Image 1: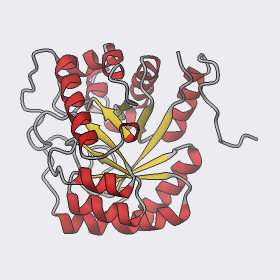
Image 2 (image 1 turned 180 degrees about the horizontal axis):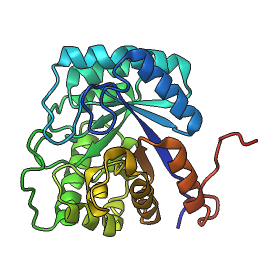
Image 3 (image 1 turned 45 degrees about the vertical axis):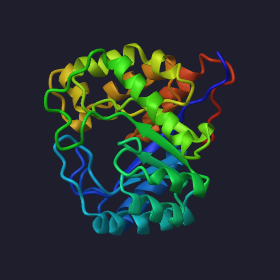
Image 4 (image 1 turned 90 degrees about the vertical axis):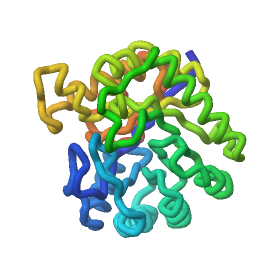
Length: 277
C-alpha cells in the first residue's frame, strides 16, 4: 500500500437548521471561533456551508447564503492555517467564496446543479469535491432505489470526474465522495462502506462523510445526533482501512485520535502536527 495519511475536514455549518448543529454557529463570530478551535484540534480543511443539506431541507436564497458564509471565509483566511472549502452548489456563492479565500468547492451535486462552477474552479486553480446524491435534499430520502448502489455510484462519479477534467480542472485536484446518507437507505450506506475499495479504485482521493448521520443512530437503537460519535469513529476507521483519504467530521479531536491510531498500522502514513505536553 502506498503512503497515505488521513486528512480531517472539519464542519463549519453557518446555518439555523443543519441536522446536528443547526443554529450553533449561525452567528459569524461563533462560526469563526469554532473554525479556529477545530483547526487547533487537527482539522486541515474547514468546510464552510451556509445551506443545510439534511433530508427535507429547503433551498436557501443565494443572497442569504452569501451573507452567511463570505464574512466567515474572509476572517478564517486571516485567523487560521487551514485550507478553506465552500460547501455549495450555487455558482454565485462558489465564485464569491473562491475570491474570498476558499481553495476547494465541495459540491453535493457534483457540478450538475450549476455546471459553470467547473470553469470557475479551473480558472482559480482550485480543487473540488464531487459527491453523489440521488435527487436533491428535499426529496432524496423518499424511497431511494438502485440496481446496484456501488456500481451506480461509481459510474456517476466516473462520469462527473470526466466532466470536471474536460472543463479544465486537473484530475489531481478532484476528490470524490460516495454521498453516504444522500439518497440512500441504511443498507445502501453499509454496502458502500463494505465495498468502498471499488470507489477508491477510480483513482482519486475519496471523501467520507458519515459524521453523526441518522443511519448510525438507527443501527444502535435510535441514538440522537450528539450520541453518534462511536458510530462515526467506527465508520471512519473502516473507511480508512478500505482506502478513504479525507474525513468530513463534526467532532475533530476524537477523530484525529482514532485515525492516528488506525493509520499507525501503516508505516509512514501519518504524522500528527498537534503539540503534546
